[in-house]
Length: 496
Image 1 (cartoon, helix red, strand yellow):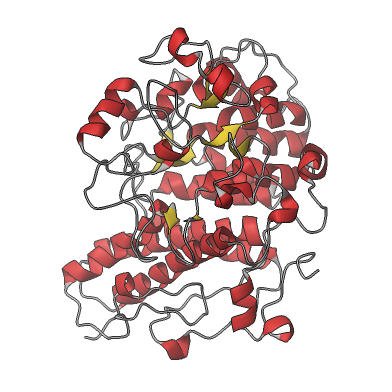
Image 2: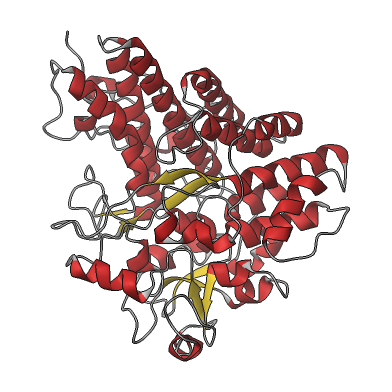
């Protein structure tokens, strides 16, 4: 039978005109091809940087959440890294900014891979149980990608059919509201969940735990608090790591009791640099170690995504998460002394770098031995159980009032080394979500937006209400849909 290969079809977004030059073909796929294509859907999560649409088009989630959310600035010397610098201040985020386009493109390419994989699988002869599981995984990742688009761009076009020819790559109007996009996310997840495995030890594939965790988060974003609680309660078989920092150690990857979904990277792959040569190639290793801050005399990296002084000072006394999130000048860190870290006090604006993508000297030496420092095997965390507990606690407080989330929040607070007190309210949620999840790139900015706090918290970055809640729609998408009078409309505030 004739099927289409998702790995060779790459649309810049959901509807536009760029398909990789060698891709317009129908292929007689083997069972191995179909399975390989299905497994490639999640690879989009690995894309961090590319040379398309222009050099240094970066799609690190930390840019869009932690830099935009006030936890970080682009670099210690905000001159060279233009891709990050543009996100330090909201007025410099424009429809023509390369990373705005690349981030949109990344998620829509993932959606097209999912759509094509689903069509392949529905027409294949592989074992029924395998087919249903792989379709469910494709729906999960399609839901995740649409969720990221909805959080950052608002109401985006929805396409559920594979685009495999130029004639299909026509513009679609945006959904009527962001709620319509969230509804599609919920539909995909509820259809998928029963066909996913209930296996808390699986960290690199979509599972029932991942689907319920994402459903809980989507419900929270929609202020559907009863469903947020209900779905959070269905995330079973996970528990908090006894030590917060164990979530971010290279040695614990793949075996953590807390993580629900990780992006699995490999280190030191020859021939793979930091920027992908083609938009369709993905980094198999992470570039975050290279990007996120070095210590003179210990390692040499680019010192980007640097914590702000306000973030360093934000933690309350005794919160273990401070040194689990930051390497601070004068404080020892795994494998290095306080004397060695002291250089940070002079070399970094707030005397600190981030810790969650830190490698100790032994791990750095192992990476150096591969000959490729730009491909690190330290994983990204997409979902972990602490987030589920925080979702549940927030939903309980918002639905039933202060104190209702005490049991869920107690676990988080005590693991952080703090004293549990009763009667937690939304201010406690706000503190703990920031202290727990910052520099993981999934929520900080969009938490501020959904709480209505962005204008106040980000005033020094010139956040403008009515514009900066969302990124602009990439200008290329507007133009390819007929310009300002076409069917793809720009987000408010970006036409001036």
